Length: 419
Image (tube, rainbow, N blue to C red):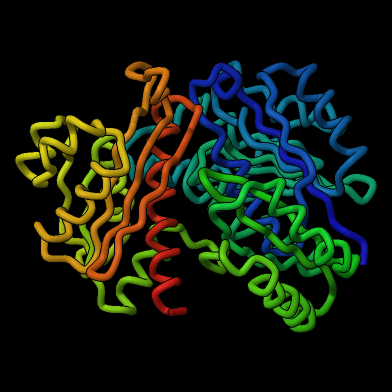
């Protein structure tokens, strides 16, 4: 079955200047994929007639569908409608239903329709109007040589309503695209290159219509397996069969299936086992606690934290022995071990975890350079420690450390079950 390809063109100097972030394209890509349409390119261009024409000419050579956002406002720099009229060799004509919609919107606001707003109801004769129930700029649907061009406002809530109500259903009917189904497998604690090496044989033997993508993030890699075909039920079964092979290939690195965050997966494990946890943080400064408590319902298992940034706080609040700090220093296995064990006792939890390190950019020494970080996990039976070496900037060191602690909790809980 032939793939249906879409391209997105966003128009607006404000995007290129970095004054606004193009969130429209990401949303559109997600929704198009749901109906079996693949986005192969996203292009951002300035409010320039020449640029718009060039982008349209290029896009039609690659895509079946060209979706355009931006440039439909009432001001002089909004050129899209006029450029499209010239591009499709047509003229602008008053579209009465659109004018009625505009008048109704202004009536509700208690404002008279201005001439500028009235001009927004003039549309190219060659297009089919796409109703905008939330704003004053109608969309435009053009068809030419089997290609579909759709122009919509850049205002996100207006564009999304148009896409949901009209554009997506019509595209699905017009093109009858194949089914596209994704399966996501979340991994942690394994670099992308090593993961790819371990999965090489499995990936090589995938059917032609199943494709694997590696999507690295902080401390982990999302595996996205995508299937394309005409039979959604069969495709779902094929994808699931392949996904079920992965725990046998990388048994220690999968923490979830689907769009699940590591902290969410850890929280689910703790709830399922009726366990509680507390945190003692130095170099992460509360970021680990933030990650844990960002999950709704975390009060069921998370008790509290001590941010022991200064050594006096480590001794006063966590009972770290002064001699431990004197002999080994704050960034040491001995110190982080006591922090984890004692925060567990302080809060009366099943688990205590701790961080202590040199996040940077200053504070490093020859013996303990920036990025030297110790983490620890403690429960009633044992204490586990890890030495991390992250040669990154301060914020990345903090984020990677929090991920490493969460993974240590996951590994410790898994090991406890296996024992």
